[in-house]
Length: 300
Image 1: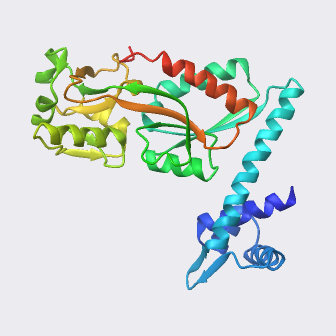
Image 2: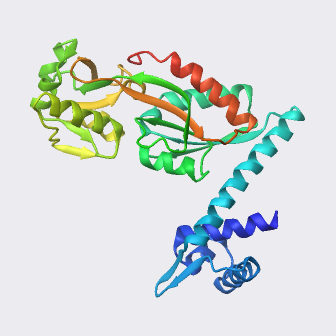
Image 3: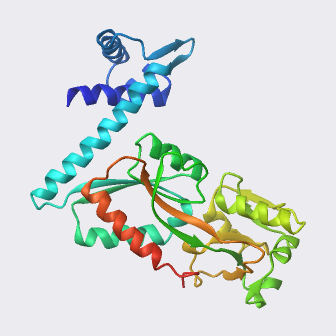
């Protein structure tokens, strides 16, 4: 596995943009790391880093090398998982890139449920917006992606898709809280807190608002859905979140928004197109697909 260790060091340098910083992170000397990379470049027959005045940067060849490493690492994890499964050990590791809306309730419940039957399986969870999640899938940095409203779907092999409505989140004493269903124009006419532009919820809000002649003009804009859920309890603003990220007993009030105003988005589970999953990742994906299908319109 020594060649994979060299690739791991190359990936560390690429992330850090500096041989010195990567050496510190890897607990080796900068001179030793520099020699390791130079030896690899000599054996490989091509430089993989551009040396800059203040650090290094992967060149085109280096990006291809790193892509190869990520693919090899993914293949090795699948092989180890299958060997362990043959031995009846039920081990493996699952890496997931997911929208943060899945963090508070859905994903912790699913991981705990899976590990009750397969305690030898470990997990890495990467919280990513929809563009980042697709990029990680394309770069073999994750096994599965669970994303609300992906953008490109170029390397995204959809394993399962479910509709997810966007709900309004309100404090119990908000003027709109007395209504069981809200119109989007009323939500936007009140002060509101909204997710940043890179998120699928915001993209759907923007399109829907334009259709009815309104604007999304948040008093507070954030890349944290956790902040949205809590902020509405401090000020009478309207927040927005998909159903899978909500529970109705957390102090705030959850209200449906009329579907003719705000269409449902799509929550997609996917893997790298053309790739194969380890036994652990495949079985967990099967569980996720079944649980996504059982998701209610609003989680109580």
